[in-house]
Image 1 (cartoon, rainbow, N blue to C red):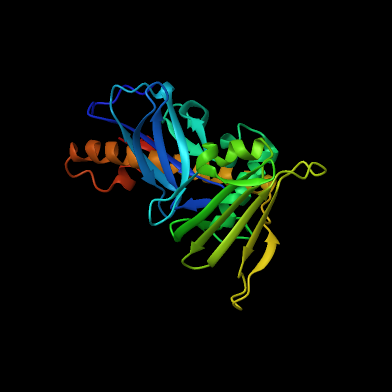
Image 2 (cartoon, one colour):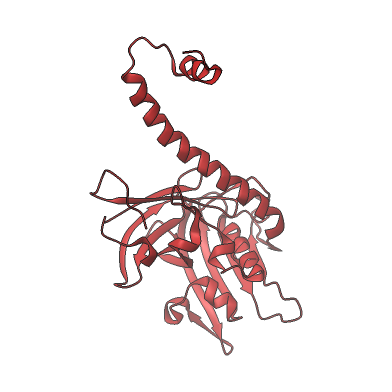
Length: 272
């Protein structure tokens, strides 16, 4: 993978994290052969990130992990996806990490992952075109998985949330969010009558000092369209950067040719 770049000191992986736009999520690239973490970055306001990898790493051997991390460095790994499965455009190498590819296209699991991300960001209504702000999670106090009726810390299970959901174990998380206060999230996958796992969030959503328990209203179907839209925007963001650079180089070689706009128009109309 990669190659063709003039700068051989490193290679970049650029992309975005979308369930809605997800801000403040941590993305890490790992070499699956050596289990070495190559680089990590947090997503910015529009959900995008950029990782810088050594030039000799074969991108086919890279997996990307999505992690929710608090201010003290306590982490919850949501899931992982191979670089190739996250690539949305082979020409640019851009990637998108979404509930769908984290869940390996399993809709029930993807639905639960999307709801889980929204719940920890305090976005219980999970409206479309919103931003989930994970950068405001001040502390993740407790993450447990229920095994045979006993709650054990997820660190003992040593699996990402996505795998635990697929294995139908109940997950509980307690966290403190700067804006939304104390949040308790429960992912209940044990209810076999309804195949879609329920994600329940206990949060003081109306600011009256009392926490209410409510299901997270995350509709994967509705958000799929929004995710597609963000991926298109991601591609245009990327192309603007590259074409911008070339344009200015071309321009600088032509003295007195006026603004980019007019040159483009002249080219378009065929006037020399």
